[in-house]
Every structure is written in structure tokens, then in C-alpha cells.
Length: 425
Image (cartoon, rainbow, N blue to C red):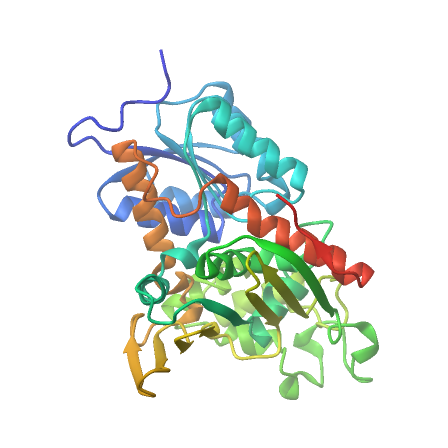
């Protein structure tokens, strides 16, 4: 008997498995369950604390430590959410596709082109649906911008400027002290952090990229920039009160804030007391001096792109900003648009007029973890696709999902060699 039930059965809850109950996977699963349209029937998570938290959210689910247990004796389910560490995306994606499950796959879909193509091949052979988590396509802001472009209000798109402001403390948390600090443990930062930004630019321009160049590196978070009197842990460091990257200030400052206790604090510790947080900083990786870590990913990078037809784009990712909304400028032949993820200022070249449009949610917080509504929009689209058997709500197909990854890999080759990289079909 098939392990995949008929999702179109009237009033039936969609059944999901969660592979990896970290911050991203848990967010998707919680939202799916909160809609009343889906239930999580199985969770694979090796970390005991994360598994315990997931059990609170999904008390009726089956829990195992390794995803292979679920693949060996698959429960009846419609789809799998795969949110394992970056280097562990491809293997479970391929296996669960072969078993007939639809897939929601956290980005990056894989850390090598060979593995990404293997995922795509498995999905095609099995005839299942794949939604890569390019969440920026699903935000209210993006939907509004696309409507403006598709209505012809900007004319032909000539160029795009796009900034991802990573945020000084976010860089320290995730990319200096955290799980994404080293390429051999995760992937290049451009792939780990920004493949959905590269996807977003292509979505706006509407054509494939043909040439890529890139510059950047690890400039600041290096041992030679460590203050002379700094110690290796923020709790004992005399420089800590004046250091922008103080772990003590960051994580103790999360206490009492419900959103920041979920993220970033929950990555560090389950404790919600001063004593508990300080113990985690003393004994774990998140209290380390940012100039005494084993990080090697970039802290700034620029990417230049030329698209089919001649349009160009520039993308900047930098740590040295507030943690806030992306900033974008889109230049067309009939008008231009400047946006911040919530508001857009549209200039009409015929009338010379400026119009300010609220496209996103006023007061939304880029640091809330929901990507300004993109997480919810992504999951709603995925559930719609499963429930109807129609993949059209999923806004990035297999080819376009791979495109952003290929751009990231080409940009890394350019950054290392100094040469412009062609992108063929």
C-alpha cells in the first residue's frame, strides 16, 4: 500500500513529516499546524533539547532521532519538510522523493551542483512536487512589486540594486560563532544566506543570468583585529562593555522579549534566566570572542550580474548594518522604484510624480524570523499545491530553484579567481 494518502480527500488534514526541528523547520511546521489544514505526524531530530521543544508543539507525532528510521518504515504522510543542516539536505530529499513524498526543502537545496541536480532528477523521476524555500517570493512586498512590474508601470527593467543588511549582531551570532561560520561545516555564506536574494533578483527581472562577477571576503572578524586586552570569552573580557559584538549584551538582552527568546536565544540555550544564559555563554560556543573563533565565511560580498537581454543587477551582502529589511532600487525605462520591504516609492517618468505605496505590513520586523510574511506565504502555497495536486502555487520551479544556486557557485568562483564567470543553460 502507498505511504502517501490522497490529499484531495474532503476535510482530511494534510499529514507532514519534519526532518530537522531547528529554528527554520520548527517555524514551518508550527505554522502549518496552526492553519488547521495540516498535522505533523512524525519528527526526526537528533538533538534532545530541540526534540523536546518539538514534542510540545506536536504531542501526537512520532519522534525518532534519525530520518533514516522514517525512511525505512515510512508512515502515511503527504509531504516532508526537510530542514537539516545545509550539507545534509540532498540525501533525505532524494530518498523521500523516491518514496513518493512531496518536499518542502530549506535553502540551499544542496551545497554542490551535482547534489542539487541529483535532487531535481529524483523529484522528476518520482513525479512529486518540490518547493525550495525561496521565501522572499511570497512576501506581500514582493507580490506588490511584481504587480507593478507586470502592469508595465516601470517599462522594461534595465537594472536592479539590492542590499541584504545582514546585521552586525546577526553576523556574529550565525556566521562567526554559529553553525554557518565555516564553509566545511555548512556552505559559502552567499549560498547559505543569500541564494534566495539572488533568486529574488531573477524573479524581478524575469530572465536568466548570463554572466557573474564577485568580490568580497572576511575582512573584520579575524584574529589580527582582536583588541590587545581582549579575552577569549565575553564574560571575562574587559573590552566587552564597549564591544559591538558583545555576546553578554546580545543574549542577556533577549530575556523578557518573547520573539528574541525564540530566536536568537533559543539557539544558544533553553534557559530563560541570567544564570542560565551566562552558563551557556561560559561553556558553549556563543560566548566566544568574535576575534578568536574558527570562522572563515565572508563578512561582506558584492555580486554583479548581467541577464539575458542586457539587464544588469548588483547585489551587496554585508554584516556591517542594522538587522533590518532589505533595500532595493529597480530602474526601468518608464519609471523607477525604491523599496524597503514595506514601502515603495514609485516615480513615473511621464508625469514626474512620486507615489508612496505600502506593500508590506507596517511595523513588521525583519528580525522576527518570518521573513516579513514570506514563511507563511510559502507554507500556504505548499499546502495549496498538495491539497489540490496543482503545483502552480509554488512560485519557483525546478529550473528557477537551481538558477539561484548556480549564480552563487559562479560568484564564488569569480571571487576566488577574479574572473567573470559565464552562465550557460
